[in-house]
Length: 369
Length: 202
Image (cartoon, rainbow over all chains, first blue to last red; front, top):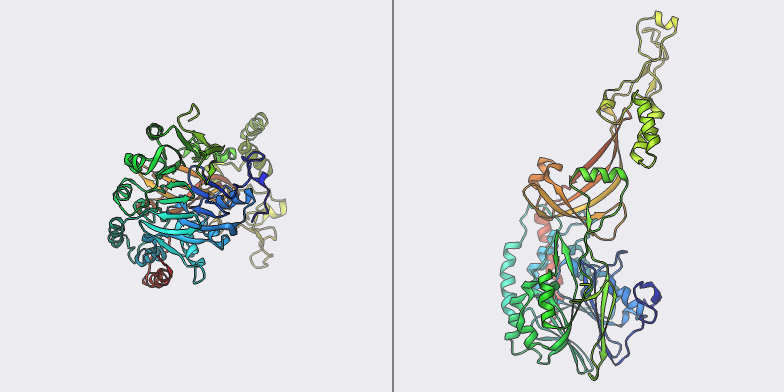
């Protein structure tokens, strides 16, 4: 990696494709409507990638971004899969494969034998040759991890990575949530004779990993898709890191059920920089307009990698269009245009975050939102 | 009458690909072959017999037909070497020419329709980024009964050509008969799970 030119990222203007300085913290959120990934530089050339999503050409977006900066995949030291929803693990196995030096971490819930057994029994080589499922992606990730690349499980209040002045902590899942999830697995075990199919949801958001990153004097909080109950457990914990974050990846695409006002009061500094990715599936989308209103009431510096636009349609041959009209209408493409929100600041904490938006990314609360 | 009408219409609508295809097809095989049910009833016209052949017992002389074979003259039957066996239509299969193909999976089921996420196979899309609402009446009763969230299907839109040469627009949604979980799957899954779970460290 690193051999691709910076001009290959079309929305990065000339000069914007420069990597951060060694003493600079970077947090870059990318997403286009069904997919989310975070690439972070925590100083000293150490990179962390949280979740993965795909570009239109099938390339994992975080790898493409790093290549555009001239950063080698070998510089990635940590990969975290917050949970196993399709929109967070697109291309994850390729990411793990190419980032050979990276430690892999996922929620402890997903490392449980019972859960893995369910996943493995639902996967079949003859299924889903076209549509790639999270099940297949997960199996491939684990097949890449062996004795030389030991995977790690994340639970609440665990330091999962440290390099010099940089550290990464997992704040969830808590033990209460974890135990509840294990009990629920019994109901999810597929029965012999049941048809295999595309598995939409492999793990609930409640076992999603929320991360606390610190480099020097700078702290960032990454919310994954953790919902309200998970946040309340974090707030109630006395063992979590105390320093407040000045940058926040808003959980679960800004949804109401992931909102807990106390997070903004107790885990974040006043008026932090906040960013989120949109989500669209099955006619539903996040964030809703009322979610945007709520978020901008918490901070004046909120951004999104894009918001849902009016659905677009691919133009197809006239005969196909006629047939589609007769049968209920043509398929619609639901993604917003792709965008990045990039935050950078000095590790010394003397300056504030410098926010850059690329592509379809917007500032929430502005006229464009 | 129909032929001249089709040709006139096609001349007036040069951008209509379906019409152009219809007109072209019609010109190549004659007016009797139409792009609708009527085509199925079309029978190739017989050539008129010469005087000598006509004096023989009645025979059917067919024009050149795809798949037809030439029967050698049989002295006992007196069949003319021009008699050709017609291909039995039910022994030949219709061919499907796909113009658009998706693979999809069901994300929601409602009373009269279901919502699906689609992967455009024709465009070789990297991931499913289209959604559609499809009426339940578009699928077979069997598929509707078996369908659940996560079920996978293929959707093809194109032309079906019958053995007689007629073309018909088709839209086919077929749910995949997915493998069913066996005890061996469960056992293999458990073995893999144990092996992977052991590798994890806190």
